[in-house]
Image (cartoon, rainbow, N blue to C red; front, side, top):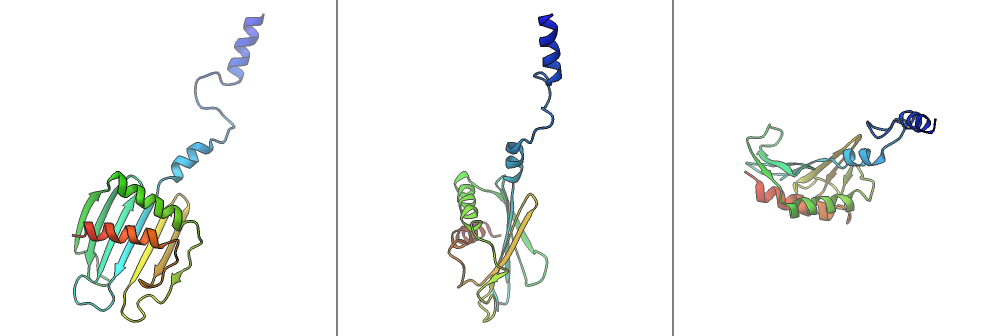
Length: 157
């Protein structure tokens, strides 16, 4: 009788096969939300050629850089893969930058032909976008902007 009770108990609790039911696996959600996509655009304000550069990065370390004229699709594009150090720098910048709520814009982007930066962060159900004056940025976003600008310039076609 004892063996039958143990067998029924194992089946009733789901045994060791399959996923448990009725539980919330927070670790699965954390892994899914660790995925992100970043877009960083640098607009050079008053210029004659190559007025806009765009950087796109994913949490898997893939990225692309493109150049275009203002308000036109990219004319040239280059795909690349981040090194572990570069990806770590992006993640560190994101942690610092995401510590604050992003305003719609900072400073006066492109008011005096100084250009602007546009930053978009997407992760799970969250999307943040801000437009930054190249001369006025919150301290929390400066490390991320500095890292993204360096990656953009190093990989620009």
